Image (tube, rainbow over all chains, first blue to last red; front, side):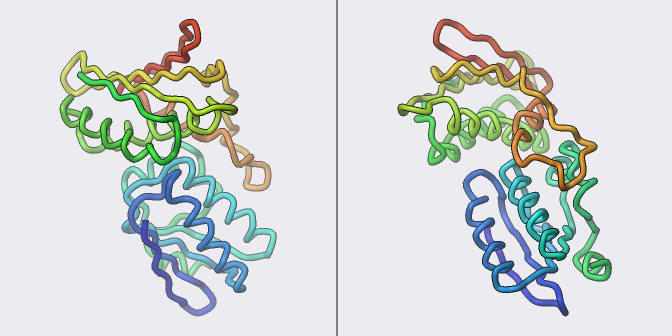
Length: 110
Length: 132
């Protein structure tokens, strides 16, 4: 799993590549926690190159979402591909976390 | 078709999934189904790695067979604590963000992704059978 990020206005766009699974979730958790502790409250997770997500990844995203809500921040996801979209749908997570077709769209809604 | 026995710990997840992906190819599963299978088995295996052997190290056995072309049957066996994950209560999908508990998703996901799931216990062994 690879994470690259850049600032866009008040938001941090975080591109996650590869697999977000039980093995890589802790590193993802750590990276996002560091960003939040550094003061970032508006996050866009760009999943264009995320090829796989398991429940470990969903748990990480849920934890970040709850954390940001407590800080009056916001999170949005963008560009979900096939199986990742499917997992969000099956788990019902598509109803609790906003999902957009592109990072630009996500940013305009934040 | 093939069996592998691995230590029941997270460091061996990658190896387990690589084995399963090879079996999926041999059985002729299409790419999407193979990914779904991989995801489901990750959930099954991580549950075993996390909960099956609280006090000692144990192993997990994965058996694959293909009854018909394009289908893969997977049996996962462990000698851990008796655990019928199919009797687990499913999360309420209508619950909003505040009330969603952080756990319980893995079981829900693999039950949805597999075509069929069955559990039985034989003496000291948990046996979970999945069909893709």
